[in-house]
Amino acid sequence: MLALALQLALAPPQQPPSDFARAESLLASGRLTEARAATERLLRRSPDDPRLLTLLGRIHLDWPVFGRYAAESLFVRASRLDPANPEPFYWIGRTGLALGGDDGEMMSRPALLEVLRLQPDYRDAWELWLRLYRGDAERRDAVEALEAHAGSAGADLKRSQLLLELRDYPRALALLARALFESGADSAGARTYELALRLAHLDTDSVLWKQVRGIATPREREEYLRIGPGEREDFLRLFWARRDPHLASPLNERMGEHFRRMAEARRQFALLHPNARYHRSRLWRALAGGLGEPPGPELRGVIDAARATPCVAELPTAAVEVLSGTMSAGSLDSAGQTTVNL
Image: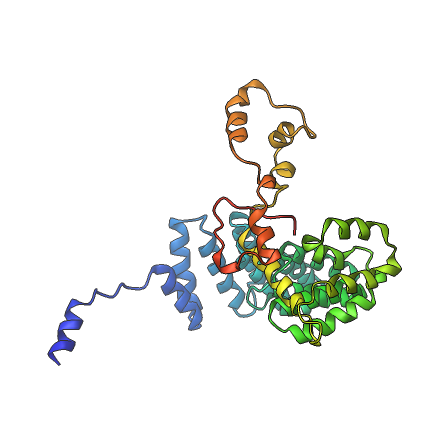
């Protein structure tokens, strides 16, 4: 008892809940009038706080009978103040679903699409989007939004579902196989990849080739450029047969290893794409002799600093080692390293 009393005496005092947490608690308990009054008081002090605007919007959304359009206007304002946060867009989507009808769908669809673009696995945004009408145009929009997260197993699974609905079977099966391999389901991944290989002649975007070109030899790269669509399946089967560590086993273990290594390389070096500076900076294009007028003399200091910074395209060693197997993924140090175009 003495030890317990001493522990309680020495413990730091509990902090009272913040005003925001108190207002959120009032909303969760259904005390809407009190929650609204508390949130509006906070907004008078911080009128441009996107968290408070979103909270007040949620209160209006829960308000009986009316409040949907007031909620939407608050969520829209919050989304403009914090466009990288999926939360306001998510609640716009929920508001549209609560409204129902054509107007509600027009409100929900772009908002939930933005959530998928920002964070594909955010709450139940994907399930909510699936409840909306979707034609081929809507499916293509969602595929494009999810492409920003290529390599994420969750995003790839969603894209493969949409591509199957669009009847883009080679691309859908290739993405699904990659997601399965990356998640460790090698047997299921191999079966799905086999189906993708059988449709390689329909792979107009060369998705199957793009998945493996990072480990292809120069001779294989030249050969792929020469072959026709009907030869792709045999080419890729031979490509993997050359890399099979155990020819007697029914499963090519190198496949799953390759896709997991590729995912690790993307995770470690996602922000160091070798062409990022070239495509996003007029100054860098001018320095590289590409498009864009050379900068004026007022930027001489910037140019000197840029020239002193090594171009990321010149340092691909770490990611190449990850893909080739000469470096273990656990030993990576991302400082000062870069990656090949994966």
